[in-house]
Image (tube, rainbow, N blue to C red):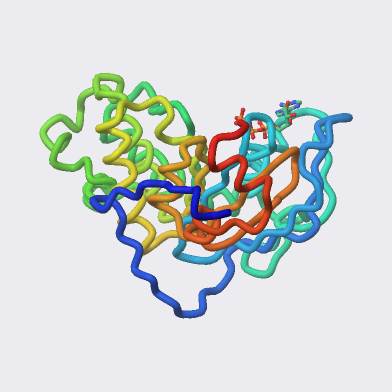
Length: 273
Ligand SMILES: Nc1ncnc2c1ncn2[C@@H]1O[C@H](COP(=O)(O)OP(=O)(O)OP(=O)(O)O)[C@@H](O)[C@H]1O
């Protein structure tokens, strides 16, 4: 059955190392359920997100992908009427516990959105903003953070001579890498990406995919994507969601070459979704 499924991998961006060492979980999701008022959007989710891996979340529209990653930094709480049961352990503490300070969580867990959303400020200020909020005032230290973060997001060479220009003057792909740099500036542990390339052209998409490959050396990344080839190219693990449930979660290679569930096979081979 699985021989029919061929997802072409792009050798240029695949840097999967096949490392087999045992990794710790950054997030352990246990029996998570979530309701938006009467809509049961997440059903008995159990997922273990490992450190320094890229975990892709795939599935058809409305299956709960965004909702799931927005629970990982508790952004979903901003929606009135949201209710959850179960737990999400981040480093052995349940982040859904009211005593868990959401500010601490969001320092550790950064997020990049579908549409690049730089602040209407200079390129420099976009990056320095977070560290300043965290109390760093020394100009030399801020300069160093700005350079390191922009280098980390592979945009330094393109912007180093225009740091004081407004970030809105950058292209969409550059803005998205700037937003990733802004995330790196506060030294997170995990980066959540909600369809980060869906608003970008193919060249900018490739740059972001290459960047994700580099970032996985130092960060744990969870990425929602509608792009099956992207999930196959850049992720170590893939979770397939359907109607609020995780149907299958496994090594990406297994999901795309030998899925266990026929619904996964139907989805990745384009029969629905
Ligand atoms: N703010 C909200 N209020 C009420 N219901 C919501 C809200 N956001 C999402 N939902 C519902 O929760 C379910 C899951 O939505 P979610 O946005 O997580 O899906 P998704 O898989 O990310 O979809 P897409 O691929 O279209 O972005 C859907 O039924 C959706 O209508």
